[in-house]
Amino acid sequence: MQNQSNLQVTFSKQRDGVFKKATELSTLCGVDVVVVVFSPSNKPYSWDTLP
Image (cartoon, one colour):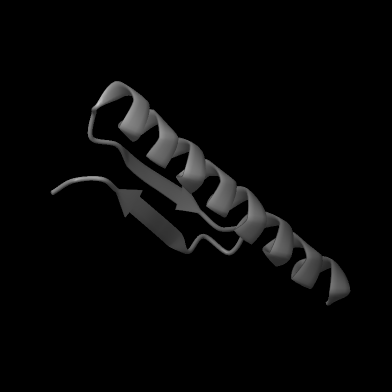
């Protein structure tokens, strides 16, 4: 159970980091960005800069 909890915490931190990098890419390049990631339990998370 502890391992699953650690896995979820690690995923959440990495997901937030990817979303932050996508924001930076969008700002620096002036482009729209869409990111879709799946958690270890196959739950989808998405983020975009679309208007």
